[in-house]
Length: 255
Image (cartoon, rainbow, N blue to C red; front, side, top):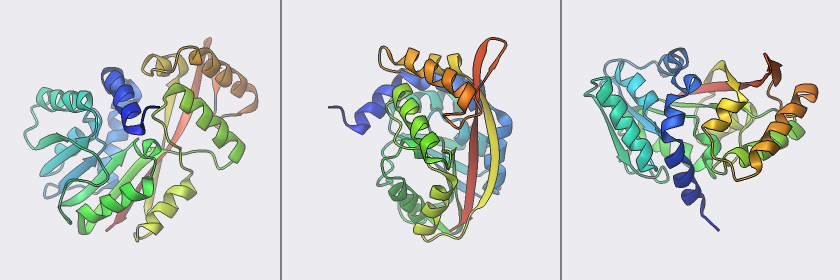
C-alpha cells in the first residue's frame, strides 16, 4: 500500500499544471487577503509551507523582503520557479523538502504561512508546531484552508467525496478544530478572515485525478447534495452545470 508521501507525490505531480492555472487558486483578491492577514511589510522574511506552485510565495514577494517556499513535490517546485521567473521576482526562492520537521533553524522567519495544505497533513498539529518553531517572537503564523461543516454527517460525506476525488486528502478541519490547533501550539487566539470560492464540479474533476470509476460516484454525491445539502457545500445547478461554494478561513496569530 502506498504511503501518504507517495500519494502526495503522485497526485501533486499530476496536478501541478492544472492546479496552478485554475482561476479560483490564482484569484488575486484571495492572495491579497493572505498578505493583509499576515500584515506583511518590506522588512519581512516569509516562509510558505507546502508552497505548491508558488502563487502565495510570489504574492508575498511583492510585499516582503525575502520569501522562501518549501514543498515535497518536485513538479510543484518547478512550477513555482517558473512563475517567479515569469514575474521577474528576485527575492523568492524555493526548495524541495518535507514540513515535519522543517529544515530551518529556530526563529528563522518573521512570517510563516500555509495555504490549502492543512487538510492534506496527517498530523496538522505537528506542522503548526514546526511553523511556530521557525517563526521568531513577534512574527505572524498564518494558516488558510477550507472548513469542514460543523455538522458531523455533512463533514463525513465531504470527507468521503474528497478521498474519492483526491486520495492525498487527509481531513478537512472545522473552524473549531483550527482554533484548537492554535491553542495547542501555544498561540494566542487568531484573527480570522473569511472568503468563499465558487467552484464548477467538472472543472474541479479536470484538475483532479480520482481513481477509475470514482468520477461518476463524485458527480452523484454532488447531484444528491443539490437537494439535501448533504456535503455542506451550498451545492446547486446553474445553466445545467453543477457548482458549489467552498467556505475558507485565514487564521493569523502573533508568535
